[in-house]
Every structure is written in C-alpha cells, then in structure tokens.
Image (tube, rainbow, N blue to C red; front, side, top):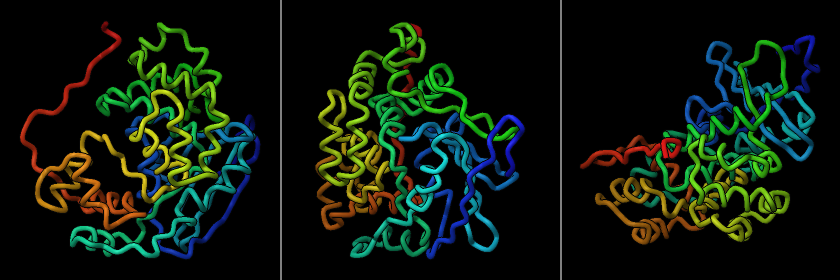
Length: 312
C-alpha cells in the first residue's frame, strides 16, 4: 500500500497476535451496514479500511492479515500514529476472557468453535456514540440511512492514498452542532435523537474520559447526557472499550434471541438479565457467543416497518 502523489506516505505497523485472530468478527460490530462510509472491505486485496477521528486529528487505517499470521497496518492523516498505536486493542489484544464459564451448551459450542471471537476496543467514544444515538428506537434501515447521509454531508473525506475506497470521516462534534434543523429532517433524524446528539456534542471532549473509566463508571458518565440511556451507553461501551459486561438492555431483538437460545422461550429485559446473571461480569461476552452461534429465533409476525421522517 503506497501513498499517491497527493497523499503523505503511510505510517506502517507490523504486528503478530499471540492468539487466533478473526479480523471480520472484530470489525463487523463497528460497521453500520454494508454501505457504511467509514468502514469498507476490499475483498480483492483482503484489506479493511477504516476512517475515524482521534485526539490528534483524522485518520485512515488499512488492515491486512498476512499469510504468516502477522497483521499489516498502514495509516494516514494527522491521527495516524494514534490509530496505529490502537491496532492491538482494536483487534482484541487487551480482551481478557479468563474466568468465563459457559453455562449453556449453545454458548459452550460457540466458544469452542469461534476461538478468534474477541471484544475489540476503538478507544474513541464520539465515533461510536453518534451512530448509536441514530439507532435509538428506529429500524436498522432508518439508522444506517441517517448515518450515511450525515457522514456524506457533514463529515469530510478521509485522508489516504489514491485508489483507496471512498471513505468519509464521521461528523465532528463541532460539525454536528452546526447542522441546521432542516438538514436533520432531510437526514431522517427526529427531534429526540437530534437533541441527544446536540447534548452529547456539547460535552464530547468530556465523554472521551469514559474509555479510561471503563465498566459501570464509564457507562454512567455517558448516561449523564440527556437522551443517552442504558441501551446507548452499552452499545458505545461494547465498542469503545470492549466492555464484556455491557448488555444492550432495551434492545428490540436481543432479549428474544437470548431467551429462545438459552431457555427456549422469548424473554423481556428482566428475564434476559436473570438468565445472563451467572455470566457476570462478562454478560455481553455471553450474548456475543449466542449471536455467533448462528441461532435464529422463530419468527411469528411481520417485521417492524421503517418510517421516513423526511416525508413529514
């Protein structure tokens, strides 16, 4: 991967993990649909491209797993050093599943069959918080459409070499605060989610401290922002610092999937937490194994229909 004449030469890292590594398992939770403008897979070259903000500025990261097991990471932009320093954590090097006991056959089978399943950490709250808020109480189709449109209109093109996939950076907190009301409407974002994003953008620099706090303390810091509840804080914690116990309470699908997989019936949030209690403080890890098992709950009715706020 070489830089183009209009791009600086990349910073490069070669890193060999001492564990079974599945790059796809680690990066898929960060991707908001196949059309995510901040995360692209180049299947021909076996490379993942990711654009992100950082304390040092924008960064583009290209990750490739080499045949000898090493990971080759190239980075561009003012935040290149920061992005490269974070590669091991992004790919699960700091995840610790010691003490985890599989109390259900499905969890045990998934753990045995997916040794490369780890919890990665981006080290960055804002990039995870923005799409998580967009996913509040709407379908995935709606949230992903809003995410794409906000990145295209109010993010900026990511730094990098010629020939790389078109990548956009997430809008910065400053850019979000400057979005006019009618542009929120055009992007399909209702007033409740807009207020939550504006409130988060106003204190975004403080929210980055949640990564250092981690765990319950980190999630509680996020929840001080109006409009950031248990579900949103958990979604951010799972990705920003690889929180193994942050269960997405309030999710439309997860309690039912966990219930059918582990006890053979649908559950509400309280029932799900009761079933997952033996896994504390690694309940989210158990959920990931359930999801990775391939189990699919029975379907009894129509799917929730997307709404288009732009038509209102």
